[in-house]
Image (spheres, rainbow, N blue to C red):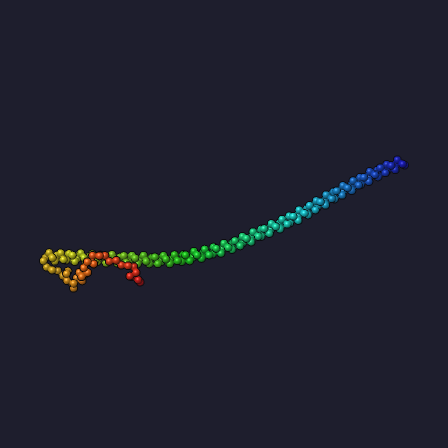
Length: 169
């Protein structure tokens, strides 16, 4: 019995060692599981914080873009207003310029007509003088009553120049 008790002691010792080893394995595996769970929790918390920071950065970027859109729209509105004012002034100036061109054309035509009349009068008076002098008779070209332009003297041959300010409508 002694040997059997030894066997039982040794088998119980082996069993106790195995139980202790199993307990250590269980403890180490439960410690590993605890470490893994803690790591997993840390990683999840870190991911949550990272996601939160990412959302905050994204929101801040969105706020900055929204503010920039507001500034750009305001600037665009100011530019459009400036364009509208400039266009209004341009149209007013183009209208005024068109009127001035028409007036200049009309005055130029009037001046040309007056110059043509003067040339005709000069040509007619010179022709009348020559014809009258050839016949030996004094013609009425020197008579101031019958020829009012003869009193103009040396101014007759000069062209008429009109200033645009003289004809205000």
